[in-house]
Length: 248
Image (cartoon, rainbow, N blue to C red; front, side):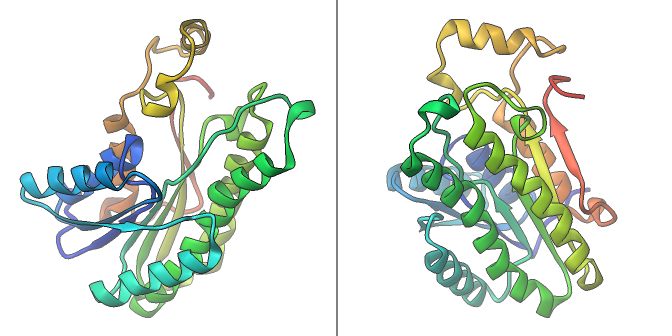
């Protein structure tokens, strides 16, 4: 079950957090994994080494997902080098929090460029080899705040909500080519991004989680693996929530 032998997977933002956990799990199930990073080459190499030490295949590629041209060129080169592309996990993202009245245009542009434009640019490039193969899996990593909203995260929530709409639309566009497109909506996850929250902020978030705890990155990665697998072949245009009941 969940055998990905012979598959090639691209995980953007794969050097840490959910991306790293997903890259490691996909590789453990037999996929050749290419993970991207934008700044921390050392962390990316550590992820590659972790995968290789476990007997998997992986490589790291620098990619600034805020650049449409870089996404197009890099994904095309990866697909050509690998002889195709079976799975795209569009995970790269940033969060710049603040109330709308204090939102700077430069921050809005950065959030939308990475979280939305980058994901769509990678999907556009990935769809081309998937169409030729008449098969593929695209997984957008959205967020619970894209479903329920959150004060102080207007721009971030908007970018993540847009991924849900994009997934549903792309699912309709490419279902005839056997390409499934889904969104994953994690809730409160223990990652580098949430580690910087104040204790009071963490407690406030946990108070809204019926299961009473944060998710591990590995638990979210398990959902990525499912959506990437043949077992999920009849699932497309859906939002899989991994949020401990935070939003129902």
